[in-house]
Image (cartoon, rainbow, N blue to C red; front, side, top):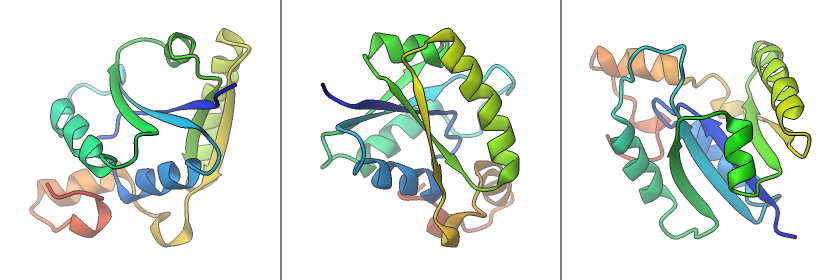
Length: 151
């Protein structure tokens, strides 16, 4: 049976931290679906969702095991539709764990076939967050080294 994992997130923007998690996950799973979801708690995206799709697809253009989709539904429902039994989540710190643990429990309740796999972000990029990258970019700072593509 093929091991399919979904890496869900708003990816606004998709950072080197996210890329680190995907590259390392390729050793664990046969297929990884990067699912760009609409976050109901966020009003507006900073980076256009179509731009993010094209930039992420560009990063993995030579890696057929990775695909990118946009979704607007429960992640547990998305997983069922794509026959994915795993969710991938990156953890930078204990605050991330507290937040992700609650979501993991709910996803497991909604889909008892769904396991969440937590990977600890590699130390050199653990401080990178999409929120910080957005703020630096918004005020004209150079974010090139924090993104696996050019903006």
